[in-house]
Length: 154
Image 1 (cartoon, rainbow, N blue to C red):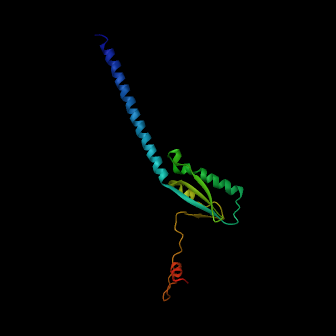
Image 2: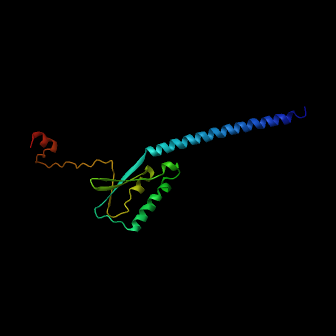
Image 3: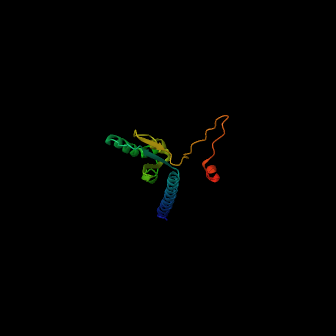
């Protein structure tokens, strides 16, 4: 009977150890699940900016270094976030012989991505509608639309 307290103490430590391991695993699993949801939310809400250079665009090495340093600062601007959600994607495309340099990054870094480092480059929102609004003058009938002219056969 003298050793029963020792047996009870050992069994008590085992149960507390098991409870601590299960609790730690549950906390780690919850944190992992939250981290994945945060990464998915950040990846679904990314911003896209298109940089369109002018015909005579010729950047200096200093301008290129400044632009690269700006892109390297994106993770610092985003803050504490999953690594896969902090990346900046660069896409070069050409439509009708016009080069477009698209930057895709986290929405928290939208202001940084929209900064204009180069003098001969226009920063454009690629998803914006590029229609010219119709202008109406008082007392003057509006001009027919192009689709109306095509229907009439003129």
